[in-house]
Image (cartoon, rainbow, N blue to C red; front, side, top):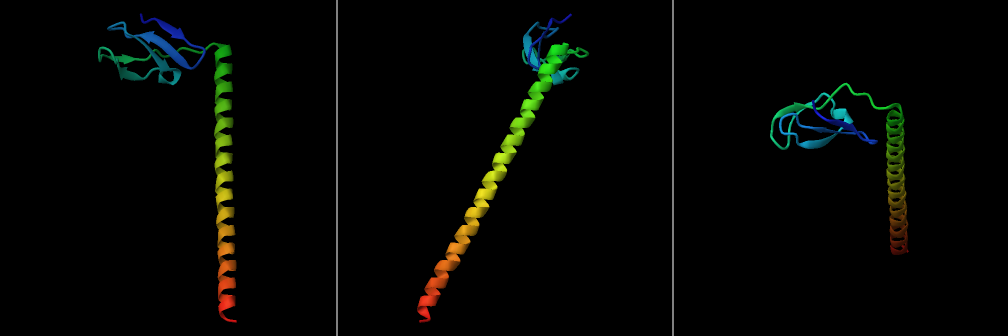
Length: 108
């Protein structure tokens, strides 16, 4: 039987059942088959494990923080785009004003 250890994060430690190589994978790899990086044997990440109740709360908090960070990044990106659009509009109007002055002075 493979030795399995749950982290406070969303990672799982276990050993390859063939070569006993220790490895760490994310919890969402549970039940997924992959090749052992050490011996190349096909193995399944242990599945069917439930995170402790406290761990599930931590995972929920981590997902919430990721969502907030993503939202903040999107807001900052939108603000940069608005700033760039305002700068472009100002440049356009300044160019029109300069052309108006130039062409106005030529017609006199």
